[in-house]
Length: 108
Image (cartoon, rainbow, N blue to C red; front, top):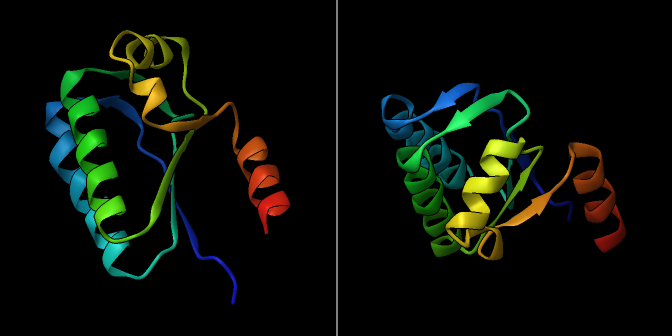
């Protein structure tokens, strides 16, 4: 049985105006029996505390369903936000989509 991976690619600014839609997108994926949710931040240029809160809630939703959530391609601002809030210890973050794909392939 193969692992079902779905990629979420938010774009622009992940803040309070986009946070609820982002959380809803993640909840919909979890309901669709996905095994792994990968959030690709390559198109996000800024994230504030509302975006971070949405990300934490997304992680809780995914984990509660027994699934896994990973993050890739964060820019320096988001990386700094994760480090300042110690979220870099909570989330598993890959430098790029390619590195995530390689890690997934070697794990299976």
